[in-house]
Image (cartoon, rainbow, N blue to C red):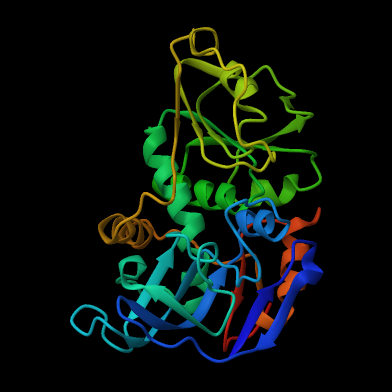
Length: 322
């Protein structure tokens, strides 16, 4: 099979496509034919050597969609079943989805019901689940004024599609580092775009709910743009900062506001199926922005890191690119 191996930290050029033996089945694990996977910023951080727990060589990839090829659990994971896998240390503690086949713990495989095609399905797991969980924790209501800090990201795009499918008249603003992608952001469902300059929103507007995807680097500024009783859900870390230093909760939350988060590792079959049922019920458009083949994995990473990046980037095996 083909697999993408990272032997040392570095830029996209360290993603090496190699031929290697398929993983051998072992007790408690299943072999999955990988039909597709999304590319995530956390994988870029890992490739750059910013994940201390990850040792190289490693096949990256924290999510996949595919078919059971072989299994050690013939009662629950029949050969040919459509499965999703996210998190569970895939692509970190053990080899992940950047391959034509992946060996995955049975406990981290979820059989789901969906009519989505492979390109749509590959766009969903990590990105839409993160956006869906954040949406629930923000307790969105039809009357809210909402800000997505990091609107051009995959999670930002998923979030606006999820909320607008249910609340088509909801006011949802996006922040971006410039107005270069304003037309794309408006076309994807946002009400307006606010420039985020050096960690500060260039507006006096305040919001009921804020999805914070830049992370600890801008949380203080996001809290300052909340209306009383509002909620910030800090889900992403696009700003490259992992922790809040000198956080004084009494001072920073003094206007009776709330700070929460969502971690996609908080996952179960029931929670995943709930999300797929929501997507089906509200006809959420879930297609990718860009599709690459496994052989073009370096190009896919370069695109996601570049200034032109927008929305969800996926890799499909056995399918055409776009």
